[in-house]
Length: 355
Image (tube, rainbow, N blue to C red):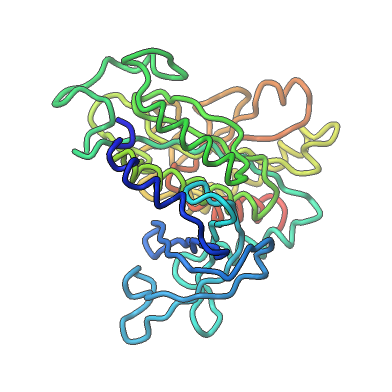
């Protein structure tokens, strides 16, 4: 399924109209349920720095972030990106939510993440997140699956090529190009193990930038889905019936110490620290993640911490190349596809560098 031709024909002439020197800024934020919201402001002209943008507000009672009798929640611009939908000088503005008294609003985890990144700044923490997700059709069925049935078992779909093995590649390519246009540090894509499941990777990003870029990449995925009639799902176990993989957001992590010669020693030190706070990490590694972390389908157990070289069934994997070179990064395979990246990056730095 692609964008309906008739709608494109109707829409395009209006998109070609001049804007009279004005700029449209799409303010985007995370709501009280972990979903995404947006609304547009007209600016008098081109903006080159996020500091040029003013705070805005919205009705928090409609987003599960405030009561109706005191509903104003404020949007503080944090990062700007070129707008791939409107083009020109129009921008996307990622915002953090605050209550009128200046305290972080519901689901504003960027606030604490930024504090921790500042505390660990001298270590230069880098992150690379592997965002898995599942595509659903308008009828609630996985995109491209036989109506009322199931496709062939897992096997030919991972990084697959060919009809019946890959679904919605046009949609995926559109998202990839939109991310590149927006300046998101997207580093790759691939079809995943379950049919209609895909992955994109963002990073390496340093510190708070990781959460900003992943959230914006998610926004673009959801927004493009509107045009295709496709619903991307970030649920870690979208299908419980049958032998199908869940969806994760594997977190690759490194610091100055792990990237230096002999950095494998620091990697093992970090793993030891992570082992002692396993349950604290699981608490912020995604809702319903226990349905995914069963010890099957390339996952570890939610209740047991393990680590190993090239082991995709471990909590923490040391890539084979890192083990050989003696430096590099580690991969935390526990985070679910629906994580808040600010929370995951924050707790990773907290455990390995701050406590």
